[in-house]
Length: 323
Image (cartoon, rainbow, N blue to C red):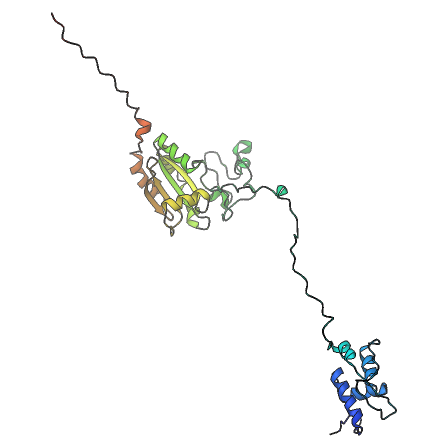
């Protein structure tokens, strides 16, 4: 049926109805907007489209378009292939940009000679693990471990009273590793020293995330009686399990599901793990077991016994003298 608009009348001219349908298809609008826009442009479809999209150079002349006579004095209208290509890109596709060719390039050029040399991180000691819960960053850089403040001015520091032990000021001092009684050196140097001095090796492997390791530092290794036993017959060597030397020890002596902290008693001569403890071990219990080994220190015959003397040549056999 004929198109109806909100203006209350029907379009009787089928030619104008066809032009309205074409404009509605191109402009995606309703019949009222198309009718008013076409009336403003004299029912010239090409002119109306150019006015709508602002394309002044897309006018096309000649046949091949849609022709129509205006009921209100309008002329013919034609829409060619060039106008459709300008409006919606319905051309033959010759104006499509070619894809960019692949290429490779360097974002930042760095001279290999100018790169900083890769430095191997220093081995982690028992006092500066990054996961240590009770680190004292303020005094960690001091060579004396932060004790200068207490020993200055005759030892009258915080909590220092004549005849009494110094009172710990913070948690880092309470749970600090016993570095003053630990052997300083590699595991090979530890074994060599133990063989030369005929002393057992006491290895303590700790974990920075296990509080039992902190308990060993605060309660077990600070016991004066245990320290006296260690100083006479043992060499204490303490490492974290994730350090380079600690991981090597765990790989050779412990299982993969080992419990930390670990205390191992080793023979310096054979390298055998003689006795081991896992978890927190009280000083009295540890000292009771160590006393059995303190009475019989390990012996290395290559260090104690002198090398055998060279065999003496046999005395020449003389013939019996005649009287």
